Length: 203
Image 1: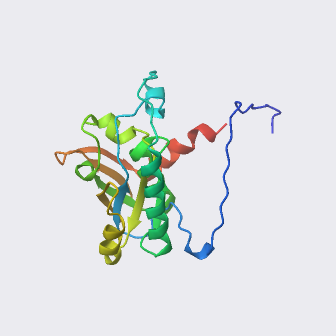
Image 2: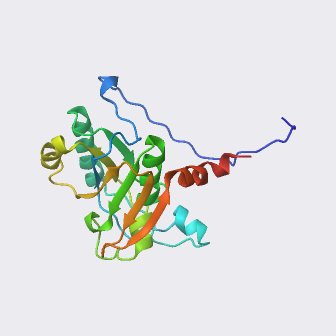
């Protein structure tokens, strides 16, 4: 309104398109119902190099995420089949910002809370520190919401790829994450998370 010009940094954009046989089977990233189970599919590695977390810490790091093409294809195929079969009601990629950011986005977009526990996180042996577990941007990972009734079918479908239950959807509008010992390390209202997420867009 005041004539101020805001320049968008130059960005390399790569787009991909595919055919969706039945758009009614597509799922979104917002949480759907309290009591549903949350899983992460894919392996978390100590790969903070080039991550948003390292950017906030003014670090670069050499341990950038690496793609295992075979595992990436297998994981994506299993997720696609599970969605097609109605086993998954919510799915969100776990990339920019890592697991903690994915859970936050799912929570505030659905208006529901999350109770998460890192004990269920599939990870490599060198991914022992909390920063890596929460914010690593390892490739080929998905956070999914599954109803209790579909758990057995979902678990069978995921055999052959790393996956683990990391929590559940709750009515309390907070994102709560516990470490491997059961100690709360994050407990934030989802409204505060939404405001922080939107802040860079409030020019």
